[in-house]
Image (cartoon, rainbow, N blue to C red; front, side, top):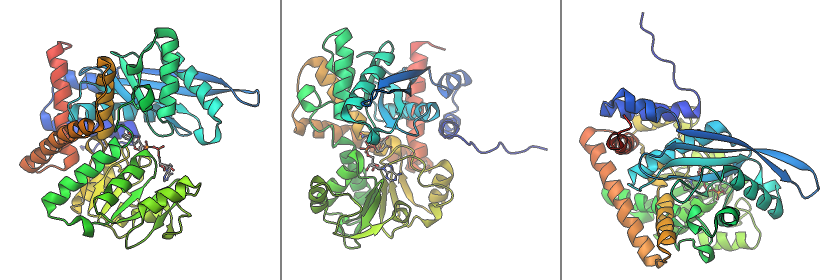
Length: 418
Ligand code: NAD
């Protein structure tokens, strides 16, 4: 008797399942599959840090390089209590496909440190970042692997990384992206991921002939990605009805005043205690009556267990893998359009690419040029995914993977690895 293969369990197994599906769609040769199933290199390091109280703590740190076939490895560094090798490995593979999909000359990587940055002082984070940079120093480089910020890290973290790397190698601003503008960061980088996510929503609305004013949006996560989606959406006339952060969220059926929310936060307030709406939990936010849902915090938040409660007709994946494979299939069967992470949040790495090229050329673009080039690249990627999805009757995710995997496979063939 033939039994069906068990469903993939771990996040990395699920990421591989997406790759295998695209590989099947492409009838990809087994030798190329063998090279792309697993990361090229995985580094697990100990990161000892002297804490402010004089004690020593040792944190687990990781850098995973998935595929360098199309260029230097590129990917963020995450500081989070749940960061582990499995997660970093999954995100590194995602970066390979994301860079290929938007046709950037980069491979995929990711880094992480298992720590709680919210409970550490600035000095402790500075020391942690320097030691982490030192310990991965032998595998990063301007033409080798270029880190960037991710969950729990920011422009300041990148400034410390650049400084630590520069102490050994001389001034090398291109070693990281997402730096402060004063240190060679690109104008428009901070807002790029949110800008890109909104760009895709606007493209979809044009196609579906949806009026932005009648297209309500709920956003989970009010960090770099979520807050910029909210600002751009609100400016473009979309009612942003709910936003949240780790402490909970706020909901107003007629739309929140995002400028007032930002002022409330600048004055030290939290998202959940913003007086311009009613409190809502993160779980309830996912089930609100809205047209668009933007999960922009953590992975695996829309699962088999709660996807039936999602009422939005469009999901824009601001975060990386916020929808599990099982939930994705369930949403597709209900004709919910999911703009997949490797497209939806690719604006960030695209402007990171601009930052890297500006650093190499020792030249600065103005913001207008950054936005123009960003929209040109994202628009090309969007059209290629949409056209393939229509032509073959695929979901946007499946079409995006087919395009990305074929590009990486072709680079491997041309290099003569196999
Ligand atoms: P961030 O650290 O700036 O913000 C994260 C937000 O999520 C914060 O508002 C935090 O309070 C909230 N959050 C944390 N835990 C939560 C929980 N359990 N429930 C609800 N909210 C929670 O991070 P970011 O840079 O905005 O990244 C968010 C996601 O987007 C991540 O998955 C990241 O990998 C992905 N991403 C970021 C970028 C980028 O350019 N920053 C690019 C591509 C993908």
